[in-house]
Image (cartoon, rainbow, N blue to C red):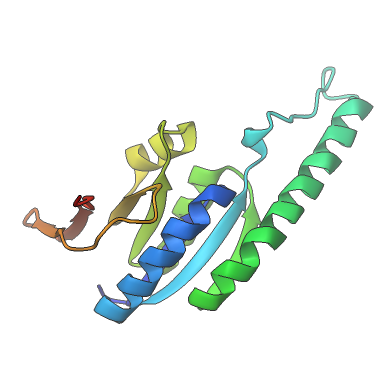
Length: 167
């Protein structure tokens, strides 16, 4: 890793605990600066302004958009406190999760995210278009960082993780 910086992508409240636990171990083991970003993804709520040939915007949609912003601001305030204890920088951006993550990733060496039970559309898009190493964590708190596999494809180094639960 050149910059020794990792970006942790938070997309929901239930992903905070696994990311914080992993960040503690990852920082200590690899001496890496870790930052967290929460993307206020408008696609989560399917809120788009309805226009009639570009002339008018539905007033109901404006109300829904304001509600969306309020919900996202409250969510960010809830997750900000636990994240600030472990991460150097915690910030938020608005937009599509995959696009914002790819844009922000330019300043980092790798990205860490959490996979829930089902792979979300933003995760599929991220996996399709990612150009830097990615670590995908399970959405559980009790995994171990014992099986870290480094793969070298000949051109440059990729990090791939196998985080297993040993019972």
